[in-house]
Structures are given as structure tokens and as C-alpha cells.
Image (tube, rainbow, N blue to C red):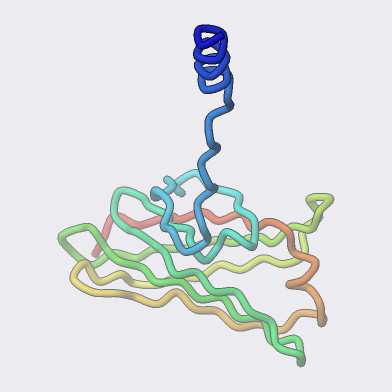
Length: 145
């Protein structure tokens, strides 16, 4: 009888499923994504998104729309080159059916020793941000000046 209980206990421990790992929380930073050819992300994932090219890292994305329809896009840029250069961030907002809702292109000069703010403000119909499900982003940097 003891052998039977021991074998049963071992069988239960071996057959028990492993405890699944918890998915990462929104506050955890993810690995940088290469954005030189463009990347599409969900709006909910913008807060933790970090984009990287050879010369620049962009993070701290913020997209907001006021009740009056004022649409605001912000992101922080940190240069990784040894001199100033210009960088362009292109963004396209898509709905669930991949229809284009809005686009923007932000040009900025990036300082290799500090932070630069990408920022754009424009007017859109009310509720456009709520209809946006994914955003395509591409970073293009110049050779410097």
C-alpha cells in the first residue's frame, strides 16, 4: 500500500502542469525594435515602445486627442552618433480594417549628447484616436551636417 501511494504521489507531481509565467506588465520596457524599415504597433503598446536605428533611439511615445479634435504626437529622441544629424519620423494611424485614418511626418535635428523632442499637433475629427488600432512608424536619419 505504501508503494502504491508513493508511486501515485510521484505520478501526480510529474504530471502536474508547469505554472505558466505571467505576461510582462505594461511598465516593463521591451527590447528596442529596428525601425529603419518601419514597424507597426498597437496603440496600447506605444508607452513601452523603444525604436532604434544606427544613429538614434526613440521612446516615450505619447499620442493624445482633445475633445476639440486637437491631435498631439510626442516622442523623445536620443542621438547615438558623434555629431548632429537630422532625423525624420513618419507615422500612419490605421483602423481595424487597415484603412488610413491619419498621417504625420516630423523632422528634427538630433543632438548626440542630449534629448530631442519629436512633436506635432494637428486637427482631426473627434474620435479619430479611438478608431486607431495600429500605428506604423519609420525612422530615417540623414548623414549629418
